[in-house]
Figure (cartoon, one colour):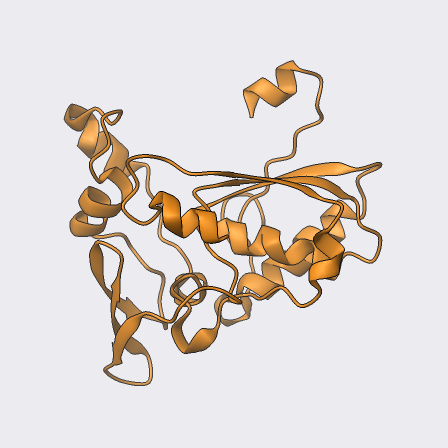
Length: 200
């Protein structure tokens, strides 16, 4: 972000709905499409063409934006270790324990997801998914890192897993033909092997 600002780009960092400075949003109302529409409204206020960057579970929201924008204001998409669009993402192995409780096998972690309340990352999730086998993470800073992680709306996690094929999908691929797209994949993210990100 600092790099772009230092090179005279106007940079906007957007908070997730109901988090940070975005104000109150009813919990059940928050999902990927809600966020994509809010982002679309924001983009329509920005003058000129824009570059959109999405990372991990925010990437499917970015993939959806050209579908929603009437005038294609997006010139480029940068996707960092991105979540897949629902068109190509497979549904995970999961067991529905009750109306609200799911046991999910996704990547290197087994998840318990209660969609009635925010998802709070477990130590297993932090160690296997967020840190993985990274050579860059200073393991002696683990407690500091854990303290920086916030709970996430479970509806967004539900979609990220593509449970019940709920992930956002691209409807009109023709809207993407004039957009330059860069997919950046890491070497130490267990959820993003090169072949998986190449499929995007």
